[in-house]
Every structure is written in C-alpha cells, then in structure tokens.
Length: 375
Image: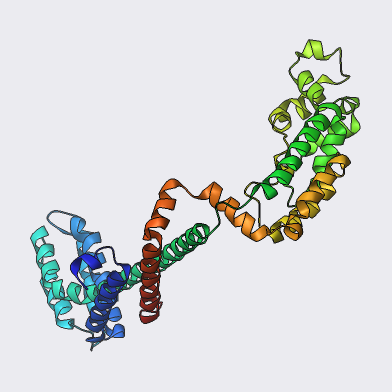
C-alpha cells in the first residue's frame, strides 16, 4: 500500500499501535513484570523521600529533618530485597546521602545516579501508554466500521431510489392521503376551537395509550383544573384569552383567578401549539407494515372526536391492498428525496463506484478488527 493510501487509514494506525505495544511488552519481558513492579515501588519510595526532604535537609535547614531524612533513606535501602534490580544504585545513593551536610547538588547527583532505575521503571509506563494507544486505535477502527456501514446503507438506499420509476402514478397514493390529512386537520381545528377544554384535554390524555399518535401528554395541573373547575367547560381559545387578562379583569369571569393563572397561564405554549400533525400521515408515506399499524391507532384516535373523517382514513389504510403500494411508495420517496446532484451521480455511475469502494473499506476494517483483537 502506498503512503497516500495509509493516510487516515485506521487499520494501518492500529497495525502500528500493535507493533509499538509488542515492542513495549518485549522490553518489559526482558526483566519481568514482577521485578520491574518491585523496582518501581522502591524507586517511588526513594524519590518520594528526595522530593519531601530536599528543602528542609539541605544547607542550614532543619537539623531534625536532616537526621530524619538520612534515617528514612537508610531504612528504605535496608528493606530492599537482595535480588532487586539495580540494588547497587540505591546503595550508592544512600552512601552519598549519609554526609554531615547536604546541598541541592547532592540531591541532583543522586537523581542522576538513579536514572538507570528510572529508565527501567519507565518501561512499565511505556507499555501502559502503548496499550492505551492500541485501544484508542482499535476504537477508531470500530468507529470507522460503524460510519462505513452507515455509508453503505445510504448508498444502497440511493441505488434503490435510482431504480424507482419516476413516472409511476404516485397520485394514487398522494390523493387519498392528502384528502385524509385535509379532513383531519379541519376536524381538529374545529374540535380545538369549539369543544370544551376538558374534552380536548381528556382526548389528549387518552392518546398516551397510542404511541403512534404522538401527542404530548397534558400537564397534570392543567388536566386537573379543566376537569374539576367550571372554566374547563370553555373551549381552549377562551381559556387562552382568559390567561391574558389582568387579575382584576379575570375576577369578573372566574371564581379563582390565581388557580387559572397557575394551571393555564403557565401552559399557554402547550395549548397554543396543539395542532393536527400527530394525526396526519406523512408524505412520502411509510412502509405498508408501518402504515397498517399507524392507521389502526389513528382510527381509534380520530373516531373519538371526528368519526366522519374515519372514512377517509379507511381509504388510506386500504392502499397497500388496492395498489402496487411498494412500487408507488418507492417512486414517491425517490421523487421527494433525490436531489439533482444525487440523480446526476446515479446517472454517471458514481454511486455504484462509491458503494464498491465503501464495501471494500468495510471488509478491510472488519479484517483489521479480526486480526487485532481487544486487549
């Protein structure tokens, strides 16, 4: 593979991360995990003492701290295992620090003497860093696989749309759906305008049992107010009008202005936004199976406030039985969704080329994940 092909290639990056991890593990294995851990613990203790006591133990610092420091250093070295790696480096450091007086240069000298220890201990960190980098690289391959799979789905969809008959008589679907949508929107406007608010809110509350008719559930305080208080007999527009009245003006229309303000005044946006969208059928229409389930729920919902509209809905529900629904729907989707640019790409064969490249990339990504397992 050329250099240009490896740019932004997550599998190549994963391969490099794997090679780095293998080298780092080999460097740890040269001395053994347990021995390096033992050395790291000793190094951490020793350098911790250096850092803690350097200031009070140097120059004209605290003499008690100076004595304490030398004792702790000596004790730390005495506790070292006989077979610990580079034991002599600790012993030499201890010997250098057991002077009558210490300066900053002595601490610097000791740290320099311990550099071989730091280098060995660093192999553990190198291995851990390499493992973390490997995991990040593998996650990038997984993400690339996910994105490529989605890309393939999109391209395959474009190919299917490109195969649709754009001259098909999609009005056989559009006209019944449009007639139903117009009818239910008119019926809903009349229901919201004329029916008592408690009936409207009760209807909305009952829609909770119909997930395919996605009205927002009415707030509990509003529901209780219109059910129990006399203003609930008024239509929704009148309640919204009341909510805009001043407190003194509202006193003339309701017996408890504060309750109306709490229940309705704070829910005006909810009431104002109530429209028939949850009751309509989308264009392009859903699949035949989705349409079947949706029209069943819509029938139950619409029959509660506009039974005359149900006849229009029955005509929509019958479309998959009475038309070449799948073919007409694919044509409708293609008409609505295909852009001029996508049509040109389909015509030129660019989409098929992109699809072939994406499938090849997905195969490479899946092979990479198989060759380099989770760690």
